[in-house]
Image (cartoon, rainbow over all chains, first blue to last red; front, side):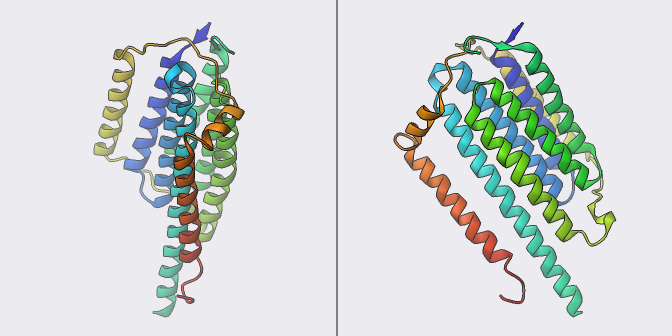
Length: 97
Length: 166
């Protein structure tokens, strides 16, 4: 038995849905970040699947997925650093009081 | 793997990715959630490998299963003052669940109703072809991604250099 484009897109949709559920529901920056990472993973999977199954997107699908990985990683690194800096500032303020 | 993709590896990797994603979303402990995220990243790399996107699979493995879990674990260790701080509250508001289920249903509906012209696999683009495209037709987006990364490095260095120094 073999698989085509649709199963990959369905797995991508399910991953995106789980990521969206986590991003909308969990409190705190880190669970939201991990959920956003899940949504980015779904997008990368879909782009790679389009690249594999569509002649028009053979090259551009993979390249767009590569750029999506870069942007998703940058966003997560930035928010994690912001969170650490914010907690550190909050600790400093608490120590001064 | 040029014409068709095997079902059994796909099913195993898809179940691993979805199961890991659900566990990651519903687990309370931050460290365990990060480990489940690592499992999802490995399963997704397997799926990308199945799609003959070796370069993407390697990049995702490096980023999703290497850099990001380490970064998140370090950030959790730096910000959690007590062990209990790493335990994340688990409260699912109904509105968030409804929006997520509706979005997922819309995507699934679109996937199942829209007819895709090509359903058989096409020969995959090799690394050499990707590299040539990155330095020719996709040069500007490649440079833009480099600028985004540079801006992130500068921003992170500035924000995390210490409160007293500012």
